[in-house]
Length: 291
Ligand SMILES: [Zn+2]
Image (cartoon, rainbow, N blue to C red; front, side):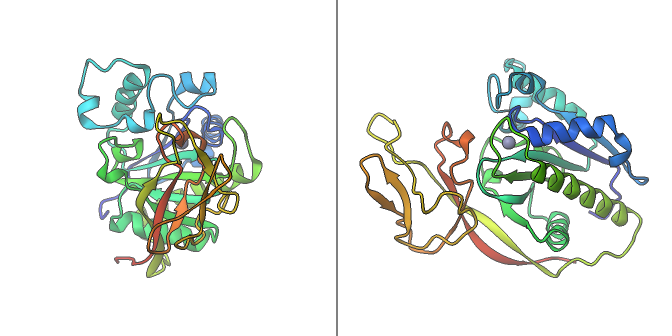
């Protein structure tokens, strides 16, 4: 992005039971100086107030899959999240960078999911990986899906996923880590706007999603097994061909049957059972950072 950043949006509670983002955004709203920077405006959005009040992910549909342009333009979609998506899309008009704060029940530490792998986002991701050694950068497959996420409403930005933390629970470690990450990003954008030189690594490690794996199921679609105990909480660790993947309810180990080593993420994410996702397989790639 060569033009200056004028507006940044920090979003929490896109999923109502992911409290890290909910409470951070409430804190930012109470103490706006924490996120104020001189060269751009920062707005905050509590994305799904009714789901936050009910401590659930969503009421009618997943808000973070509700930002397709045709859905936003469709007056017949009148569910609560359909309405919120339209309101939020209007609020996000003119926003250059979106930071959407989430948490996960998977052991993903501090994960950045850039909206697109463009030069701006790659450089930001590389900078964050350097500043926060725990940060990992993952690229989802959602750019090819027809259910765009909230972060797609701006050219730049990312989803931040932290975990493992249970739904409806605050974990001080992840709360602080997310808060620090937000400040680092805001300071980075401020330095960019002010033309200050920033040391950005020339390459970064990226986990590119390549496949989605569902749980073993019986003929009627009911679960027939669960994540193998040796794989539980092993997000970002190499999974080799024939390594244990699932444990069937009859006690059999079901191995990973792919031909190459992969790095699973979102292993046993609570919210993904309904989506038919037991984990997302990624490839680890070294990517050059464009100047
Ligand atoms: Zn979420």
